[in-house]
Length: 90
Image (cartoon, rainbow, N blue to C red; front, side):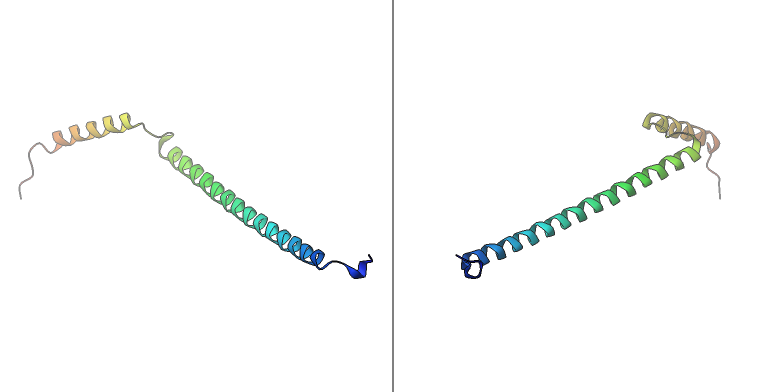
């Protein structure tokens, strides 16, 4: 057989290969887009964490533990009771 007398099935296979290749390319683009979005989100999260750390450093050098916060709140409340022992009269 010569090239001019190719099977009709060959054309269908070629068309299917083209469709398959386009589908693979589309899937790759979608995958790359999702990966890029995840990279952007991760970078934004890292920037936010860095900002939070910098804010904490400006406030006093470190973040207080829950126990330390509870103790400080208790101490403030105790002092407040002493200051306002008798409620001011109006």
